[in-house]
Amino acid sequence: MQLDLEPVETLYPFVLTEEQEHLRREIREFAAQEIAPYRAAWDEASEFPLATVKKLGAMGLLGVVIPSEYGGAGLGYVDYVLVIEELSSVDGSLGLTMAAHNSLGTNHIFLAGNEAQKREFIPRLASGEFLAAWALTEPGSGSDASSARTTAVKKGDRYVLNGNKTFITNGHYADVSVVIAVTDKSKGTHGLSAFVVEKGAKGFRAGKKENKLGLRASDTSELIFEDCEVPEENLLGAEGEGFIDAMRVLDGGRISIAALALGIARGALDSALTYVKERRQFGKAIAEFQGIQWKLADMATELDAARLLTQRAAVLKDAGRKVTRESSMAKLFASEVAVRICDEAVQLFGGYGFIKDYPVEKFYRDVKLCTIGEGTSEIQRMVIAREILKVHPSRG
Image (cartoon, rainbow, N blue to C red; front, side, top):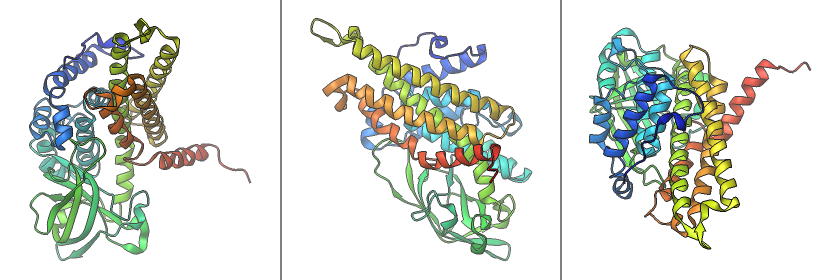
């Protein structure tokens, strides 16, 4: 499939720098050559494209927001959003793999790790030599992190981990996993701590690989800990502060999921625009019907609005501002808009939208994860409400 490489300025509601335009075009051309021809086969087989991920590492994209002193690209979240959107407009599986590696696993080590931990792990993660995973969710602990049951018990100079994590992106392929475990059950979320667990550690293994609705080329699996011993120097941050640090990590992670949603939605919209110009009914292209045009207008407008919210969060993040509210707003709006856009794209294709010969069927399946991962839409509304009520407290 040949992707249209029209000037990127037409795809954005504001002006990008010359460097950002170059970055975006570079990713777009890579996706056209290295991802688009294979995405259907990867999806059908649930095949993780490790070789392609390694190529992204060689391009510096596995350390997008990591400073150059640690081997990263030294770019900002605005650039990161561009990267994730471009990849996801072709295959959201690659966008999700990148997001979990960059803004969750690697970023947690960068934000909470000491200098020795950063020097040991981050250069290999940023180069693509290592792949990262981030493990918070458990079978009985999703939105309610305080109900986590994976434990880490201090024994001498080591911690012993026992428990299961589930829905972990990159789980089977990660060389380094950041794992949140209970060190003091009596303290609720303040009794959670974070650890770096390396692949091959005794008592640690990847479990069931999930057979998913969408994003099937992204690896999602269980992580299992059975008397897994971790050196005490692999404790990330202070004991009991794992959840606090995880929330800081998620502020950036939710921006990446918003970007994932943008990319999937844009891919669906681009496919629909091409199709309605070609599909003829009643003697003319269906793009000439006003009902079709109004659908397209709404889709494009909502997509630009979602992109602006996402970019606002990214700009504030780059400025060093706290972005809990803004990242949740971006993630909530972009993900729900993306679901609507993909639904409308399938509708515009009619019966052809329901078969795998056309890409909108895949976009439709892929996009639903965006309203679930890294905090459901319901959780985002709770976060946003909490943040705005801090600004306007009750006077009762």
